[in-house]
Length: 52
Image (cartoon, rainbow, N blue to C red; front, side, top):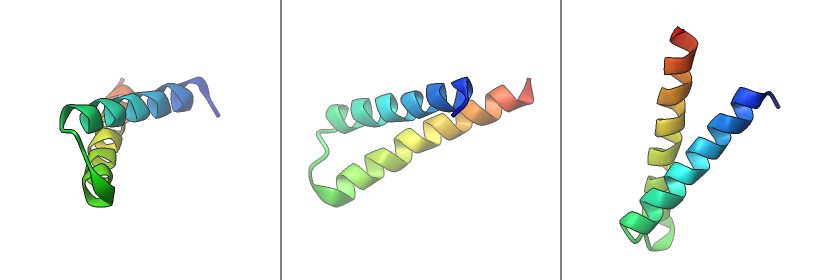
């Protein structure tokens, strides 16, 4: 795993954790929604970095 892959994985995980806590996700569907939002944040970050 490259440095950027590791960093972006951490960004996605941290964003997912924060979203899950902020909205108090309960159950699979709500947690799944939080995970998709966290992953989207990491994905957008990756695309922004690749533009450079």
